[in-house]
Structure formats: C-alpha cells, structure tokens
Length: 335
Image (tube, rainbow, N blue to C red; front, side, top):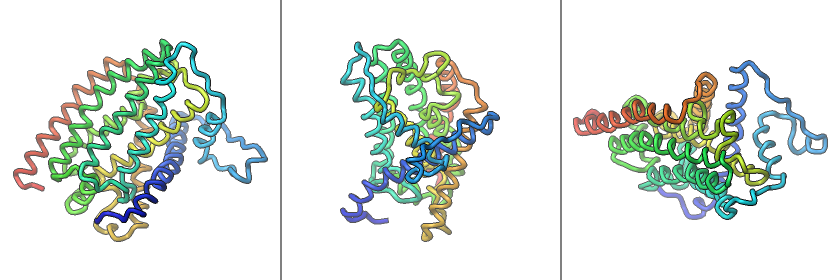
C-alpha cells in the first residue's frame, strides 16, 4: 500500500470520522437491542413527532442519534462551585482524541494515517486521553460523586493500560512494525494474530472491554452507588458530547480489536475485493459487539479493588506471556 495523495488525505480526514460515527450509531443500537433481548425486555418505543418523520423516519436504528440530538438541544447547567474551564473542556478533549483515533484505525483496511510508522503508539496515547478527560471533568465538577468516580477511573486506567500495552507490543515484536496497516498486511501474509498469539488477544480484549466501561468494569459509573460517576454533573450539550464519545467508542474499540487480531476484515481472498472486505469487517464487528453485550448482561459488577486485582492476576499475566511468546516465535523463526 502506498501513501495517498494530499487531496485524498484531506477528504478522508473529513469523511472517516463521519463514517465512523454513523457506524457507531448502528453498533450502539445493536448493543442496546442485544442487551434488551438477553434481559427479557423490549426497551422504549420510538416516538418521532409527525413534523420530523419525513426527515428522521421511523427506524429504531437511529435511536442513539435521537438521544444525542435531544441532549444537544437541552440547556447546559454548570455547577456554581465547579472549576468551569476544566469542567467544560474535558468532554471536548475526549471527543477530539477519539476523532483523531478514528483517523488511525482502519475501516475494512482503509485509514488516512493507519500506515504511519508509529500509528499503534499514537492510538495508545489517544485512547489514554479519554479516561484522563473524564478524570479531569469529574474532579473539576465539585460533586462528591464526580470525585469518587474519577478516583475509580484512575485505578481502572492503571489496571487496564498495562495489559493493553503489553498485548499490542507483542504484536509489534512479531511483525517488526508499529504501523496498524502493516500489522494487517502481516496477518494477510501469515495468519490472524488471534491464532498466532492468543495470549495477546485475551489480554487486549479484557483491556478494551475495560475502556468501554461495561460490566464487569462499569465501576466508575455505577448508578446504584455513585449516580453516574465522573459525568454526574454534566447536562445538556456537554452531556451530549459525552454520549457522542461513548457512542464512537462502541464502534472504534471493536474495530481496533478486529484490525489487530482478525486481519482487519481482510484475508487473501478479499484483499483485492473491497465490497467483500467491507462485508467481512462489518460482520466481524457485529460479532464482537454481540460478545461485549453478552458479557455485560451476564457479568456482575466488580468492586474497584476486585477489578484491579483481577487485571493483575490474569490480563497482565497474559500480556507478559504474550510478549515472551512473541520473542520466542519470532527469534525461533516460527512466524
């Protein structure tokens, strides 16, 4: 794969986040639908005003978008005692980092900057900015629930960043590259990393589920304990931005896993067949989102100390084994 012309890069930088957001709406809907069915409930019925039906239609697939639009049209209230600059800036920082992440995560093999030599490092840093943003926002809110949620977010971030980094670097060691696109090409020439290094796949999957804040790791926003944690005091447009961030994560996190461990939806028979690659990528994403919804429904919530201990016992250990396995297989010429 060669580098794209500048005009194509500019156009793709504009279109890629839009495509990622539209796909994230669909996968957020799938996540809600699967969770509702597994819990034996139908969920709320969709009510669209007659005046808006010509524009919005009646499809429930767009329900996550309607929820976001509703929040964006509401009034934003900022606590009088909050550190207003930090409180307001936190959601925008999280959104900016996630939009930037979408430019480095290939969609069915295409990405404006996925071929950048250090794109894997860039993704790690950009994804780290999201929990840090919520930590700053919750701490600046002056709400005890926001502060408690931020404290929990700090501990969780320390827990899942380690196995995530170890698992991803294990892939870089095997393929001798830090480019996400080159990792996909390596899998196309050999085998998917979920087969070559299942230890890394398990470690990274656990860490990415932690980033999504679903059970058993939705500890920083445990409703029955601390209301909504770091985002308790957010309302209106700011809460709408927070929901956009969560919605984008619902697609980009599974997409990143597919790129790193399932060949990005591209196999040898589909490499020169873009429609088939896109279909395979979307189907794989559906499967990953289904598994995450299944995990969320059937898992009890950990306490923060239990989650931290669990990450140290299992995903971190798997990450260490993944790095050792990568060195052994590479230098013994097994891949």
